[in-house]
Length: 249
Image (cartoon, rainbow, N blue to C red; front, side, top):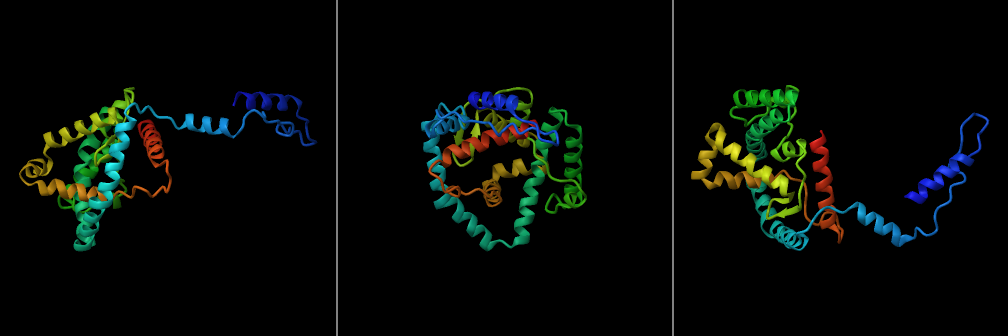
């Protein structure tokens, strides 16, 4: 890159001016012959690096998730879709999304995002009252889109580093900061106990199981879909970069 910048600077200095007043700085650009394919691959690999001191363990969990998804999760999802009418599936998904407005509201307030907090509050009220407990989603049709904020984003907003990359069993890619955020958001939902769902889930594990199946059914990612032997590295990099974008939003 340094050689490229130096060459660009030299070309800029020697570039001739056209009759219209524009220069052609690239016409004299010469690439460093020492930058061979191996150097390019090394630079590309460095750009994709994510702090992953537990990579050996994470890869084992990744392969477990891959097989569990293939042999258990997706067949269950397919069965759920087969026996459940689309209207019911939509209602279940809307209901659990409505519960998710609780941590979104709390984390929007913690991040001083007033507009987003008001959006979540309005969605929570409209969908609970007009949407019959959240089964319907009139808020979206009213111009209030569903947004998402979690405690991992809140920690990142205040400068807490991501920490080591983690591949969580069943849950997938995460990091130390975001894993702590998951625990905090779950604890918040349990403490608020909105619509008594938390208490009902403790006595009826089927509610939690339904929420897990609904989440997987509405998650488009499929292991192996990247069709690459470096899928682990790509997923790790995509997750790392997407979290940075969400925190900066």
